[in-house]
Image (cartoon, rainbow over all chains, first blue to last red; front, top):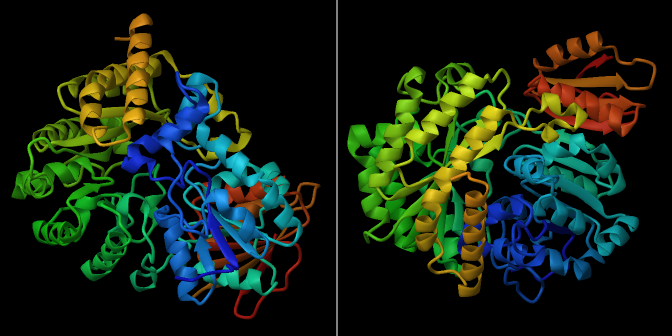
Length: 494
Length: 80
């Protein structure tokens, strides 16, 4: 391992430089303001400090930062991911600070929604502000440090020109930077002018063989298995990326990195894990079984990031694949896994307009049935969906929202969590006041229906999910859940 | 690879006009890579133009510089 000094430091604030007690869903707590607990305690539960080595390098770091680190070190550049608390000593000699984030200014979902509902700034944007205003960064900036910002929330900087200028950001990079970051950093190191903004389009996205493999452990053993999504939903930027499936050899090398550095679990990441090796949008058993067999060689504790509900239904109905994968991943009847899924709407009118292939290979006008069937399949297979609903779509009518509310009510019997999220309308963001728009009566009813659903299931789910975390954190989280339930009863929401 | 050098005069006084900007965005979509040079204009004004480009779903790779820059070899050049 490189011993420093490092020319390039790669970092982010505490809300992301954490393994969230090994439970990435706890990380979502940072998208809201603290509830019941004081902020320091809330942050300590959601994003505790991570172990570091003597140079301040975290033993686990966000996967995206690890990719940038790998790309730069492969090119012979002295770069390392550094924990935010240990930047000071490295900034004296570093020339570039590369920062990644999921939600710099809490403009994305669900942060923007919690901000509207509570009127309080979420923890993530507060933490980022504290991070970027560190005196050591300010001082290094005066000595010529170049700051490059990127990650999934890079777009937010275009709505924050004052912050861009005030904090001396040199370059905003939007898109898959695995390849382009090397040129940018080389230019920065040799004193050449940097572009202020870079947006990586289809042509600029790295080909499969250009995607670097991580060299050090990722948070909770996250390993990417594919990029892109073929469904083409109009509200999603991922669909603009070309589809690329990692080979099993590439995946195994990253699994080995995580296993050799002491990570004890694996989170397979893709926009739809079930489409790994698929025939278009139809999951195929062989590649998925092979993938999971390789993962199980290294890890007992395996979970997925995202799957699509139509793929769940197709996979089970055509090859009992969900049952087979569940048997492989969950040997004990007490085991469960959680996964993010997108319902988005219960209105077939809106679904046809905005996500016409979301239900494929089933017709989009059967979307509510696809959702219910997939929830039933996952319930049986002990897979817990954490589902998103999008409210505030362009052209959304009160009737559309009521259809979604009906669908959520129909899902009551299935073990799951359902989270309503505000649509983030880039075009309408120009005045920056969009996120202060109050929800309509129908939207409020939908939110209450989701809350009732979640409070019904969350105690049972948390018994399983929190069973092996720090006992103090578990007690505090249970007290938060208890208080939220009591408040909901007090306001007659249940 | 098709490359375009786009010079935008973002100085106050209505430059570039909306019509010229929209025409430029249509043209950009035919190129894989677009190098944009803004001459004049505040960060706020420049970001406003970039936001319009993103909302218009321009899929080319964009490299944006503030200040004058000469057209590199191998690039087509237009000015708005």
